[in-house]
Image (cartoon, rainbow, N blue to C red):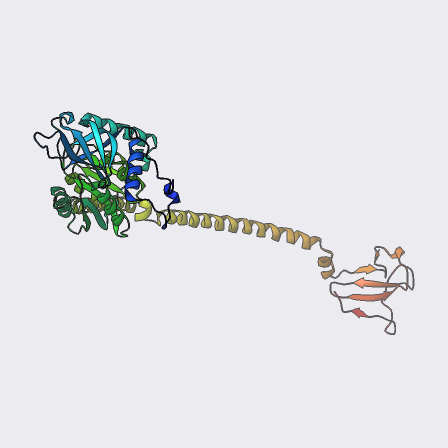
Length: 431
């Protein structure tokens, strides 16, 4: 426990009260920093050991502990007997230590009293916890998965530098579709700085307007090698992408979290190449098969139509379409002959009857009687004189003849004689 550092009375009692005219000496500042840091409690911190060189016979061992994701490091001091065997450069550890500030050179370090390697089981447990949290947020839901384009204009590829994974994707995709175009980002995909490098590559590809799909490709490796692909920052960036993402990480049995959040998981980089572009030979074969089936269907329909047309053409109504009309025309001719015959017969009979009736009428007609020399006497009012007693001497009468009429004057009631020439005899000109 470091005792409290007393500030001399002639100096400012707090750092905030210092001025250019009345500053603190550096030794006081360092002492105050050491006092402040010494008041901090012991804590557990996680990182990766680098620059560890065990010095035989040394009581204290020194190594540098670096953050797993950021470029941040700190020196750690530990008694030799407290440093476990098997812990070496590259080991992922958790350290129980207390911060320590060395006043002489103003350096900050950690005094460790316990170092524990982080095993695969611990790493997997943390990954499972992250999976559970991300699954609860819905980042693994199938409804979020976007379909891949049938034929992407440009394929974005994030892979290691000069790796077999890059060759697997490019070669196999080109074999399937020779015109395939790539925008390749070769970055660090393992160890410290891998996550940051992949995030920058993803951002560059995402802003490329020609990139229609992005592939993360890496060969197999240990759980530690594949840890960057289960990093929460990378996983969330992939989930937020608007371009379909394909994850082709490791071998068939490797399942980093990136596989779960990506729009498509390919078992290997070679499998990814088969999934992102169509096979030109298969497409040509498919087109040829569609054309063959189309021609067959069209030929079948044409043959069926020709058969139907031949069947229709063989029907009597098509072969001799006027047959029914001819039959009806013959019937009409027969009916017309029958009608003319019966009409003529009826007319002759009616003409004969009419002639007989006309003869009878003529025999009974007064005009016929008049034509034989008879006349009909009428008064001016039209009444008939049938006997001499009905006439009055001096009365004027009309004698109706067969043709015309005579005006008469009665001179004697017993006989009607025409008046003398000086009388008013006249012949009517009307019938």
